[in-house]
Length: 109
Image 1 (tube, one colour):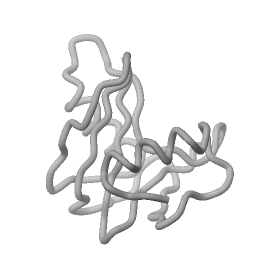
Image 2 (cartoon, rainbow, N blue to C red; image 1 turned 120 degrees about the horizontal axis):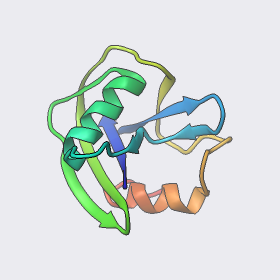
Image 3 (cartoon, rainbow, N blue to C red; image 1 turned 45 degrees about the horizontal axis):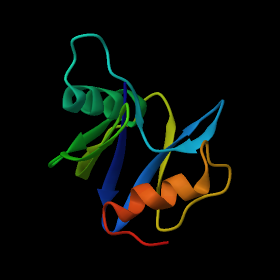
Image 4 (spheres, helix red, strand yellow; image 1 turned 180 degrees about the vertical axis):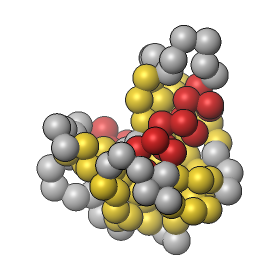
């Protein structure tokens, strides 16, 4: 099972640049015994140093738990990150999937 998180700030969304895969929303595997929300918070902090004002569960699709939240602070983490208004090139997953996830938070591209 995995978590995917859509971090939001000032009408933009954050993505991390995975050196092997390209631009993606922060997230990753849920560790054994870990709650999905704790995994989402942990992964976002590890990958980009994100601290949230709030983080809300949006939806479950199979083994994917999808969260979104307003960013309070970004301290920097293991990966480069950037705030976007539009999807970048070099996505790690199909563009249609990113567009679908963004619709969950009211962003239509």
